[in-house]
Every structure is written in structure tokens, then in C-alpha cells.
Image 1 (cartoon, one colour):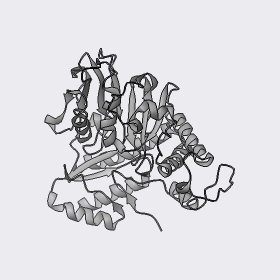
Image 2 (spheres, rainbow, N blue to C red; image 1 turned 135 degrees about the horizontal axis):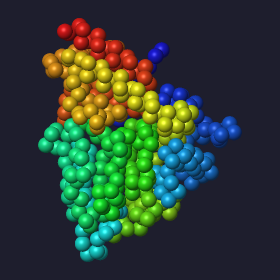
Image 3 (cartoon, helix red, strand yellow; image 1 turned 180 degrees about the vertical axis):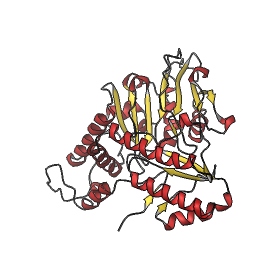
Image 4 (cartoon, rainbow, N blue to C red; image 1 turned 180 degrees about the horizontal axis):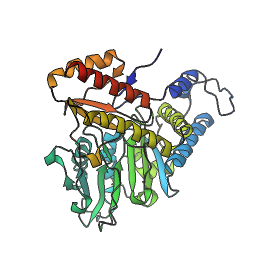
Length: 375
């Protein structure tokens, strides 16, 4: 039986073969040689040799896939992107501030998630909005040349893909070219592993795993080594990047099963041909859906063409009275979780790595049939 296509924004669809492998190992995990250990991953000690090998393999595979330079630490943490909105300023806001002053942190607001990051960081630092597209309904990204970055900002925060509004940075900003020495902090929760990362422009990147990397529970942090060791005194030990790095992400019990599942996804990505190959697939999927929307008289997408997201495609029906009929018909056709976020309405199709082109083609076919029947 063919599984329905799950367009959820997260927790999101996962590769079927990854789920099948996890199911086969649920009661008794086996190592690379096929040797069984007599217990499932959820039962393992996080400091035992079995799980340590799982974690090391996951980190090594991810470093290779994303071409993460040696001077960056890969941390497996908890709390999701929302927690990182506090953990980042707790660690980095004092990079360029005297001990007795609140550090300066700058934000580029391009949607709901960068807004949340700015609001949370205000509890721990002196925040400043360097640029915002809110006045235009978060349908564009402000030209980097117009950003007002403070000279003493410790970092500049961006959300590289806004899951709700469907806005994506297709090129990371070069802060040095803008005359700033601030570190670039990137929330790449819904973009990670969907395309290459220019690490020469990044100080720290973080993301929840539940969109492109695996199940909820794991948070990935990739941080440049020179940014470690500047945490505020109030920063909890388990959230101090230097402490987490020094303990190989084992300072506290990590989300072991989520790390294991992410490792299986990393292996799956490698089998697809790596990040370059998966990016080509993502481009093809996004182009197919946007073409269907743009050629339609019923559907529309308000985002500027140059910054439309490949991962999250919001679209609206010009006749909103048809919304319920569209969603019920989609579900009957095996196309799930297409309702837009409650804050913006409409529809949203999330096209993460594990969504096959066939799923997008099925959605396009349904959209066209629905439009013909409601002309």
C-alpha cells in the first residue's frame, strides 16, 4: 500500500527506508558488521560503546555531508530552535561587551521565527533590529546593503528559511563585505542539509532536527571554536557551548534515539548522492510547485520570486470559501497536512528532503484538477 504524502512543516516526513531500518532494529540494534547487541538504542547507556559508536558515526557523516571545517564544533543538544533563541545570546552576546554591560545583538526580521529570536534575546542582551520586512508582510528580504548593523554588535542573527512565511536566503550575507566584524548566527532549522553552507560566512548555525534531519528532540549546533568560552555567568552549564563541546555532547544525557535516527538520515542522504544531489532534487520540486501556482487563476504565492523558499511553499486560494473543500479533497487523495499556519492562513506545502518529486507531482495534479472542477 502506498503511503500518503505528508506535507507537514514539522515534525515532518522521513525517508521510508530510514523508518523501516529503525523498526527492524527497535528491539535489537546491530553494528556495521551486523553484530547484534541484544538491546534497542532507547535502552542503551549514552556512555556505552554501542551508543558512542552511533554518535561518532552520526557526527562524522554529518561533518562530511555539510563539509563542516575542522575549526567548527558539532554539538548535539536539546530544546529545539526556541531554546536556542535564549542559548545563543547566553553564549555569544558578551563577545564584544565589557563584563559589566549587556552585549549588543542585531537581528534581521524576515518572518515569525526571526521575530521570536529577537524577542527572546532581549531578555539577555541589548537587541537592535538591523532590518525588517514586516511592513511588507514578510514577503521579501531587505537588501543587505541597507542593513543597519551596530559597530559593537556581537552577532547578527538571521533565519535562513522562514517556515511560516516561505521566505529563504538563497545566499548567506557576507558581513565582512558590509563592514561588520560581528559573527553571523543562522537559524537553519528548516533549511539544514537541503543545500550547501558557506561556512566562511558563518559564526554559528543551529536548527531543530524535526524538519530535515529526523524526529523532534535533537537540536544541532555548529559553532566556530573561537566563539566558545564567552558564556554569561547565568548560562546553565548544560547550555554552555564550551562545556557541551568539551564533553563531546555528553555532558548531560543527550537525545539518544533522535541522534540515532538522525544518523540514519545522514546515511540516507549520502546514498542519495550527498547535498549537491539532494539540492538538485529540491530545486526541481520547488520549481514544479511554483510553476503550477504561478500559471493558475485560483492559487497565488505572495513572496518575491528571488527569495521564495524551496522548503516551505505557502499559497492561497483567491476564493477562500473553497479552503475547506480543497483540504478535504487533498486528504482524500492522500495529500496530508496542507493547511497553512494559523497566523497567516491559506495553504502550505513543505518540500523537505524526504518528500519525493512524485509527491509534489501528485499535489500539482490535484491542484489542477481542483481548479478545473471549481472554475
